[in-house]
Image (cartoon, rainbow, N blue to C red; front, side, top):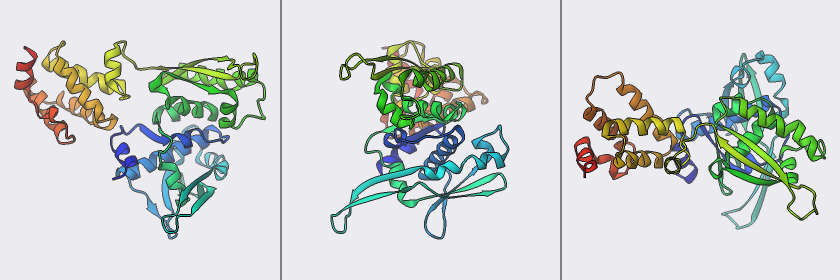
Amino acid sequence: MDEIQIQFQKLHTETIPQPNKVTEMRYATNGIEENMFTLVIDALRQHMTGEKLSYEDLWGEPVFRINLNEIDENNKPNKTFARLRGMQKREFGYEYTSPQDGKNVEVFGSIFTTILKKDSDIEIHINKFAIPWLTYIDKGITYFNKKSALSLKGGHTKRLYKFLASWKSKGGVNKSIIELKEMLDVLDRYPKTIELKRRILDPAKDEMYNNQKSDIWFEYSTYSSGDNGRKHDYIKFKIHSRYKSNNERLEQLRKGVAFELFNEILKFLQYCLGATSEKAIEITGACTNEGDRFCNQRYKDIKGLREKSKTTPQAFNFFMSASQKHSDNKLFELRFKECKSRSKI
């Protein structure tokens, strides 16, 4: 299993991975096109984890089926399909060294070769040469929330959300105004920074802040780097997480796992072992090391236990045994009696 598949395996089902070079590529888009691209990337994730396999056409190109109502629940399928024609302009490009003769090979083309409509579904044929570009993480990877990306309004806001999601763990990022305009493909459309603020940044800021489904929101300011005199040529983004603990130690322990999942696991373990138990915190940390997907399953285990009449030791041991089946961490071999006796020392 290669690196990208290993990373996909540990993800929560609502967390979508996307290479940074894809996140920051230059293109203009509308909200419906961006939703389709989000769902395609998610379908690719599902295929690579074995959750839901795609199929190949006669020429070996992968095919994904997506419901048009999932792309846009507010419009009729025919109208949504008509607005997807701009997807044929989405291009890719990369280089690699041929293993046969050692020569440099340049590849470029359109990501989507064909889109077929069947009732309220579409079949999306993806250029097989685009798959390495869509999955190779040589320049890092962006993790964003599927529900957040789909719920936000407008193509620019959705793209800004994904870009900022890649910097969420850092709490912010500085970006050249020129580079940002190029990424959004509005360099000629909004040549003045004040227009960029009014047309894109301010609406996106308000939308992310007011949309409770968005897991992040942001503040921004512009400043001069000194390269262009006093002219403001950079933007400083400050990124806020909607679900965040005020405890810095716990935030560090989370390591990017969704706060709701992290919090439920910690509360359960503290209930079993005691509110001040270091062992509860240590086990929670071991869970977050396994990633969002692992923690989501532990969350489901906890919800299932509420419907069963188990004692606290039995519930704890069930949780640890289930965790042990999906992790090599020796910590999950511990059982209630051992943890309680150690927590009293």
